[in-house]
Image (cartoon, rainbow, N blue to C red; front, side, top):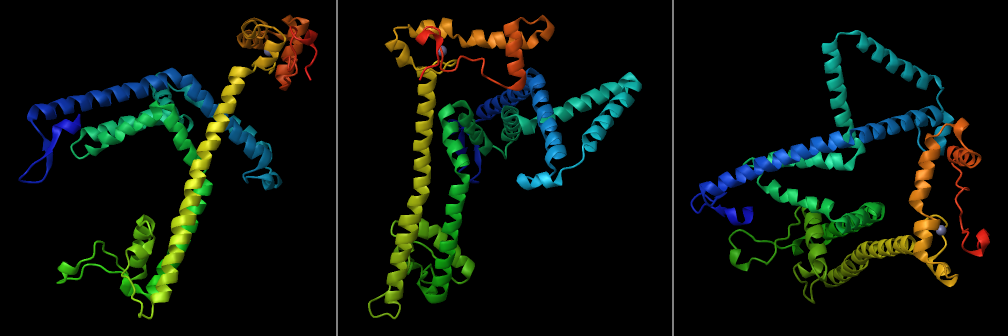
Length: 388
Ligand SMILES: [Zn+2]
């Protein structure tokens, strides 16, 4: 919308709206957007409240379990610092006593206590749910974007497209998954650029040319500065990486009879080879490679989902060979929803009321054994014997 509405005041150079009505429209849209964002935050929170509470609870339990079992230290060394079990008990008792104290107070305090508790949970959920965090951020940015100084943030809100399109999220996850490799390459980049900058600072800092006052006519196309090491480094990073042929493209060219001809010759060539060709391509290679990996692993998952029975894992082609209709198998013989409903049914039933089979499955579920699934077996094929 701002694409058509905004213009620049010719007298003052300030960004403004074309007309008063347009500024009113954008104000209203801003208010509406903020309100909707607020409603989204609240409704998502209300809808997912129990879920978020559960997530927080799980992470707390995990933390307490980790600390009491393995101590604060991460890794296998942590076991040596195992703390006593007392901690868990005392924390639990503390919690219980606080709860008791509050319930004894009058209902007003109880009301505020509940509200505070709710707010605390609302804030804590930020850590545990990406969508919740996103909604809140969207809300705050909308508020700021509605103000005059925050107009630019309206464009930032469009970044939400990452959230809407799944493929874009995948692209981002590649950077996240390869963060260590990419950052290490960047660190190596920096070290080598620093070395080059130091070397040029020491040897040929006068080759970094820029506009001299009074000589504007002879100004070079690009200004390079190398009067301090920092300037040298900044110029090297910016122009060394951007120039197609390395830093040498932008430096003052040495003449054949100059003392530094060969130094520059080797420096320019090595800079181009090491930084612009080898390191740059390592960097691109990591990204492109991981794209290919990601695609391959996605295709593998896709082929497993499409071409294998979810329950027994026997492939679609085996059923074709044995002349068992594939759809009969996945919708009737091994219907995964039937399995799921059976599991829920068994979990909710008391053990004393279970039949023999149910008792067996319940026991398996409690101990985390999945042997009751017909893995690699199917009654319609091979008489139910395990496949080779
Ligand atoms: Zn099956």
